[in-house]
Amino acid sequence: MKTRPLGQTSVEVSVLCLGAMYFGTRTDEETSRQLLDQYLEAGGTFIDTANIYAHWIPGGNAGESEALLGRWMKERRNRQQLFLASKIGFQYPGVERGLKAEQIEAECDKSLKRLGVETIDLYYAHVDDRNTPLEETLAAFDRLVQAGKVRFIGASNYLAWRLEKAGWVSQVNHWAKFCCIQQRYTYLRVKHGASTDPQVVVNDDLLDFCRSEGLTLLAYSALLGGAYTRPDRPVPEVYLGPDSDARLAVLKRVTEETGATPNQVILAWMMRGQPSILPLIAASTPAQLQENIEALQLQLSAKQLEQLTTAGI
Ligand SMILES: NC(=O)c1ccc[n+]([C@@H]2O[C@H](COP(=O)([O-])OP(=O)(O)OC[C@H]3O[C@@H](n4cnc5c(N)ncnc54)[C@H](OP(=O)(O)O)[C@@H]3O)[C@@H](O)[C@H]2O)c1
Image 1: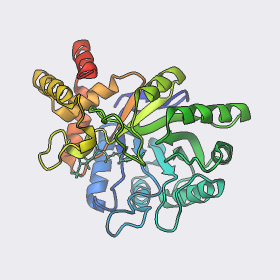
Image 2: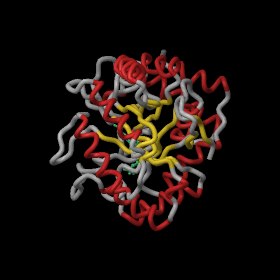
Image 3: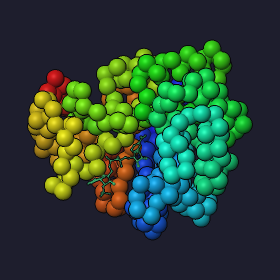
Image 4: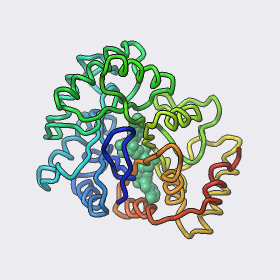
């Protein structure tokens, strides 16, 4: 699998990052391991999890995804091959939402233990915390980097102006800087004024900010849970705006022209976008994962990319 630089860091990461959110809860142990092996066999090494995954699934307490990854890495002895991302900031039973220093430090230690690793390659602030000074949050993240518990830091669910502010706080204090932003992003655009709180959707401001500052954008919920292809998954109401019919019509046309599936067209379109966009792919069956990985083979023409981007605008 091809790689791309992660923001302004010196490392390269797989162009498709595997989301492990439901591994160990909604997706059973055996299937999760099968999907992890399949991703690795396709050459992927970038895996995304979080401390809270997936406490909202019946029977889940949080930490199941990290613990499953820990067991799998131990058995496969493949930690050194991987680039592991985890996150801190959302609440789960017994832990409040927030990015106070003590929360960051305590949750990082728990994640390291569950994963059974000494270092997390990329550690995200999972959601902005406007009640804690950025100085406190970023100093805590920097201490983790200095201690070797974390290699790089990223942000998720932040507005562009908050990232700009965070960048300055890191710079003047010579602390580690957020190198990437993980945000909700798909082909359809959210209706003006619609809320996806607490998740934050990519907007033009963020795209411009990432382009100008060299931040990589990691796109989550890229396939809207399968809504582009599955009659059992209607497109969420917030995505049905004045431009959605036009965008879906162009998506259909490009799908017919290329013989690829809508999911593959969307992933291929994203990977060719500017700034550098890396989609998170998730799946609960090997067939879904295969379809998503095969997006790597799809070459869209400049005209198709342009038509997809400008549809409905
Ligand atoms: N930073 C954040 O706040 C945040 C938020 C959400 C997610 N994430 C990360 O992003 C990853 C992906 O998020 P997501 O689950 O929302 O992504 P998604 O791609 O929108 O949805 C994944 C689901 O879509 C269905 N699917 C995937 N590929 C398919 C295919 N080829 N054909 C038909 N259906 C398909 C499957 O549903 P079924 O399993 O039901 O079949 C799969 O579980 C997560 O694992 C997590 O790591 C981050």
